[in-house]
Amino acid sequence: MSIDNVTYQDVATISGGKLTDIEPDQREGALRGAEILAKSLQLEGVDVVFGYPGGANLEIFDVLRNHDIRCIRVEHEQGAAHAAQGYARASGKVGVCLATSGPGATNLVTGIADANSDSTPIVAITGNVPTQLLGRNAFQEVDIVSIVEPITKRAYLVDRVARIPAAVRLAFAHALGNRPGPVLIDIPKDIQQHYPRDPDGNYAEPRMPAVIEEPEEPIGGMHEDQLQECQRLIVEAQKPVLYVGGGIVSAGAEPELLAFASRSGIPVTTTIMGLGAFPPGNELCLDVLGMHGARYANIAVNEADLVIALGVRFDDRVTGQVSEFIKHGKIIHIDIDRGELNKNKTVTLPVCADVKPVLEQLMATPQSDYSAWREYCAGLKRDFPYPLVEKQGISPQKAIALLSEMTRGEAIVSLGVGQHQMWAMQHYRAARTRSFLSSSGFGTMGYGLPAAIGAKIAQPRRQVIDIDGDGSLNMTIHELSTCHRYGIGVKVVVINNQWLGMVRQWQDMIYDGHRSCSDLADPMSAVTPQGEQGVYPNFLAIAEGYRVGAQRVSDPSELEAAFERMLADPDEPYLLDVIVEPEANVYPMIPAGATYRDIIMSDDDLQGVSGESQGSNV
Image (tube, rainbow, N blue to C red; front, side, top):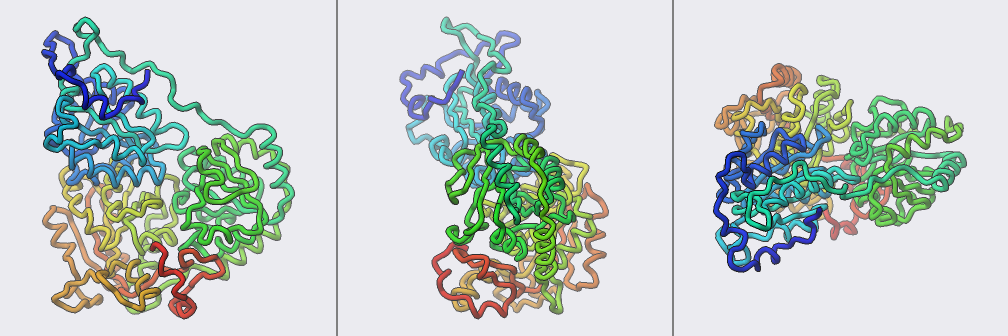
């Protein structure tokens, strides 16, 4: 059973109100569409949804409680999508968000696109106007299925009550199947209100759970000839590197990665999506590569004679000038999504496979001696540490490093987008998988707080911290209300430099210091980072307005005590406003479109930056 071919126009052109001119069957035990939806979600193991009520989804809100499904009402639908992402990323399960029609549905789009970019399994459910009004420009009507088709794995418009169980079953199977991602189900209001009927007009009990074929054939390991070629390349290599990403996390292949790396002795570098997949204290760990990654990681991967890429996309933030990336080394690229193979980078051996069984297969690879290469990489790591700001105020890098030390890397951290995100990537040493939640591919400001809410719901016994920037937090700070309303113990650490820091850094680099619209300070008073006067906005007052405890710290000697206060009660929502050096820049930095040889390590290196990057995206 499939509903893939149902389109908005198909339903919109139905004449005579065929789907709506049905008197409700009040027979005891009969289930309306909304109840069937709730029951179907319950059968998928859903116990929480994140959403916002409106006219076109009130039927659904009305019945969730009867099926032991908790609804967390956020303050904006974008927050619902990000909370569902945080839940999914922290738990490995599907996150669910719920919105009404029109603007409610379109407010989900940014979060859906973000989930698509980072391969996060969420199911977005939207209400829509009754079927007889579809295509008539009715109040709060929108063809949300067509809008999200390019950014979802599937998008369904449900045109029959009896099709709801199949739509839900397909949605969850697709969301988690092979490469995970978002799926949307759009349900007109009358479909929520009515009862399934057989051709004679009688109530027909829907089959739940729906019995359907799995929508995606599971992908296994390598074929024998691929395995032999892969093993040959590994044995012949003298300077191999494992380059791993979010595909390892999605596959749950962290133990296999550690086992293979330990047995083979091959150094490991990760993308930001792969953080936590490999122990940061392991001697083989080269940390993160790419634009703001470690210099030693970028050198190692580009000087390697073999790169084994597992669950990565070769995106531009890693490769820089792609033609120069791993220019002289061979590449084995293993990914579950065939469309990623040879898409951005032509490789020596492309393999469409699940990385988990692949790593198990590779355990039989004959061992080689890579000791000289490992010593070289260890020397690079000693010679090129991440640079730190050494000024009078609080160093943002040191603040995050201290937080990592005090939590022993055991907290789940979520991030906004900007300089603080890159500093956290560099200095927060995530000790566990599914503990570093970042909008990595889409770069969505405001992601941090709602994602942290979802993560805390998924993992209530763990410390969950949103490391955010003052600019990024401003976009979704209203979700502090959600924290207070439901007692969600999210901690918010604001790395407050009074700038859109990454924008300001690029403006200084390539726009001759013309800081257009990047200043966040109070226009009516001078910023004084060492005191409280001039700090804007007043996050303490905003937190107080939402009944959330808060503190500001600007003295480095007081930072540890402030962190201790914040972390004391893991179930208390709390905001700590950390006033940091306003002019601190993120280094290392490889300018967009450049190569690892063009890396900038400090402000002093900026003299060599030309205008070639002026057309590049930040």
